[in-house]
Image (cartoon, rainbow, N blue to C red):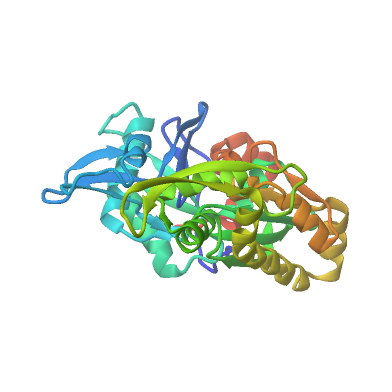
Length: 354
C-alpha cells in the first residue's frame, strides 16, 4: 500500500535517459532529465488562438502575454490550486515541454514521474496521469511533493526519525511529517503564492483605486512584500489603471502596507503548520525540535517568513539553498537507479500509477 492508498507494481529500475521527472506546478513547471539535470524551468502558461485553439506560445513567452493579448488570443494557466483546471491546455503544455526536453522528437514516449500535492484526490490524480499520457508519456507515476522536496534537499526520510517539510508553491502549501519512508501526517491548504498575489491586487484596488495585473502583483510581493515587520523601510512605484478615470496611474506603496495585506494568507499558512505539529506523535515531534522545519517552494522566499515561523512555533526553520527546485530535484533523484537502490528499498511505498 502506498502513500495515496493505491496498490502499485512499479519496477524501480530500468529507467533510460529520455525518462523525465516533472514538477507540475501552478506557477512554474520544471523538467528534469536523468543524467542532465533540470532542462526546463518555465511558467505554467499557454497562449492559444480563441477561434482555432492553435497554440501560440508556451511557458516564458506565453507568460509575457498575460494581460497583454488581443481579443483573438488568450493566455491560460491550466493549473489552479496545485491541480489541473483545464485538461486540454495542460495536455498541450505537457506535450510541448516533453518534446522540448527530448530534443523535439515526436517518436520518444518517456516514462514520467510527476510531483503532486499530498492531498490530491483520485479524480485529480487521474487528470494528471491522463494529461501526461495524452501528451505522449508511455507510463506515468506520481509522488507527493513534500516527499520529493525532502528527497531533493537530502533529508534522511528512510530513517526512524521525524522530518517536517513545508512546500509553499504557487497554488498550495503542502505540509508533511515523514519518517521511515512514509508520510506520518500531512496537511494541504490552497493558500500559497497565487493567493498572496490576489490579496495584493485586492489591496491596490481598495486602498489606491488602482487595477494591476498578476505580474505586477508578483513583483510587489518580491520587492516589498514580507511576512514579518522588517527594520529596513522599502517603497515601490506601482503602475496600473485608475479604476475611476481608466487612465494609467503610478502610486507609491510601502512595505508596511503590503505586510499588512499579506497577513491573512501568511496567517493561514502558519496556522496550518501548527495544526500539523499538533497531530505529530510525541517522539517525532521531539525529532522536529532537534531538526527543525524545512521550507521549500517559491512561496518560502517571502521576506521574513522564516522569522515569523520561528517566532510562532519556537522551532528552528531551515530554508534550503534553492527552494524553487527542491521538488524537481527530488523527483529527479527518483529516476536515478543508484539513489533508489541505496536509499529506497521499494519505491512502491512512495509512488503511484494508474
